[in-house]
Amino acid sequence: MASRLFFDPLVALRAAPLVSSTCSLLFAWDQHFFLGLLNRPENRPHSRPLLRSYFSSFFRRALPFVVVTIAASTWLGIGNLYARPDALVASSSLRWYAAGSALAAAHLLYVPAIAPSCRALICADGPAAGADDDVNAYLDDWLTVNARRMLTVDLAAWAAFVVAVTRSLPHSRVRE
Image (cartoon, rainbow, N blue to C red; front, side, top):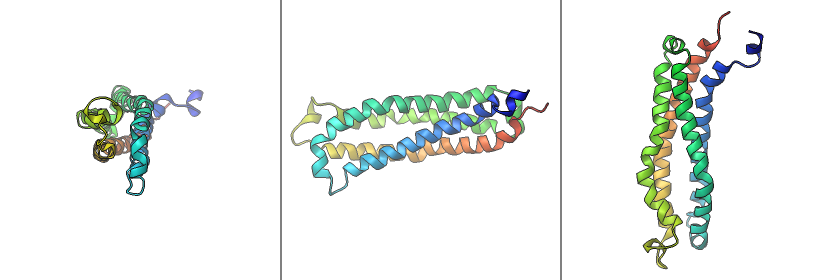
């Protein structure tokens, strides 16, 4: 088919989970880098008064992107398991797509660990809003969990998709 010379939907499907997991991994790194700047010793006293409002705005805007990249990585990886699975078996990439999908979804296993620091950083009422409250300590907690998640499931999902894509793409072309 001539149109596949310009765009092959199967190649796009094979590569898509790698693209979305790359976005997820890079966003996790950006979060860690930029929010970590607020907690550097020279910035801590200055960031404390605005940290709650900043994190609240940040969280509302970042959450949809995180959910979309996790869902895209997970479901595009699963979609690959059903699109010409014989080619994935032949290229030994089927298990890599499955692993990448499972690891992308495993991002959500960190929600219970990160939720308390998110709540403490966002909420302006309750014990987390006391005058003696160290909001920078809550950000430290958030950064710790974010780093662990990023360096475990996010990086592992990305690596699994790298292997899956590099193994599967040479086998994705339909021979005519």
